[in-house]
Image 1 (tube, rainbow over the protein chains, first blue to last red):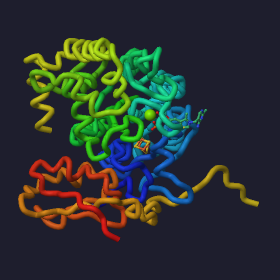
Image 2 (cartoon, helix red, strand yellow):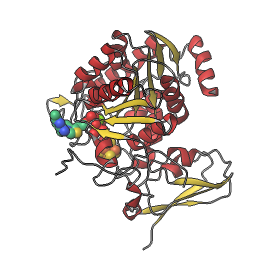
Image 3 (cartoon, rainbow over the protein chains, first blue to last red):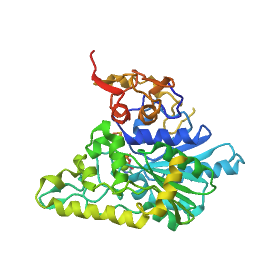
Image 4 (cartoon, helix red, strand yellow):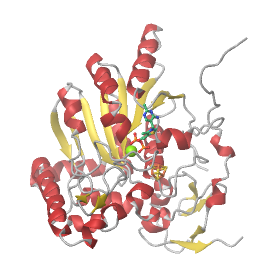
Length: 307
Length: 86
Ligand SMILES: Cc1ncc(C[n+]2csc(CCOP(=O)(O)OP(=O)(O)O)c2C)c(N)n1
Ligand code: SF4
Ligand SMILES: [Mg+2]
């Protein structure tokens, strides 16, 4: 088999986007890293004691403090004068990042630790059976935002985590998707070349929670981007510097939604069209806000493709 | 007495798990149209698809769970999923 730093034998579900995401990240980072990870699927399926899928040093923190534990690791490396020997990568799921771990992450940003924080965004608390998080998209059916007679599923919008990171003055922020593996890896490498705190949020489909076909993980991830629902961009020193252009015309959100059981209620119940329209609006606003279709964006996206 | 807080595990030990036991379908690499784009190897969530030579790819049956992502994403449809017979 090919040499990887995140290994087979892990127990993630069939077609798990998070398992793919983690492997892409550590393979791009290389062997000289120390990683931490919040409680969540990634930690559970990669570190089933007494085994570990990690070929690099790995610390499972608690659910809420991956960023704080990584801060300690980084501070210790500095105190020992050994910071040239290893880069520190903190990891967490969307719940562990945008909700319960947000305070520790804010502290890590504020203190300016030289750490890359990677959020694997599968848009709900998957490890405990699909509860909604601050990154669950509008309209999604989860067990704490159930669709039914009086509900269309999650009624809140995704928290804008990159903007929260930017408000801390984080020098490098990026969104990415496992649909574009080379892009994920280029962003990890770029982030690690920058000193200070960095934040990368990777969109990782979860066939179990999204009720999607495991074989279609990449297709689903790609549609999230091509509809405009998951804009892919880089922000350097608070300014958006690169945007992944999407094919014109953008695909309608229905193409994305219909592949996933978590949105099935929108197409079964009368009145669902209005909700689908709202989701289309979210995509349209992203397209406008990030210039996903504009000529200016086209040029940088072509450059990104070449990397 | 030495007290170890938490659990310690040795790196790269998950390789002992035969997750291939989960498999219902297995990928068959047809080797008719492969262009050597490496997509199947890059996106396998187990990291268990690999190249034997430039345009010949295969998988490690010890770990492949049979998710079918490689077959779905091969741009030239050179991978087929077939029912596993045991
Ligand atoms: C303080 C605390 N509260 C709750 C839990 C239970 N718990 C473990 S993992 C998890 C969900 C993780 O969700 P996310 O961070 O999105 O990661 P995912 O499993 O989706 O990858 C929860 C609620 C916990 N371990 N610790
Ligand atoms: S529940 Fe989702 S995130 Fe967790 S292992 Fe399964 S596919 Fe991956
Ligand atoms: Mg999650």
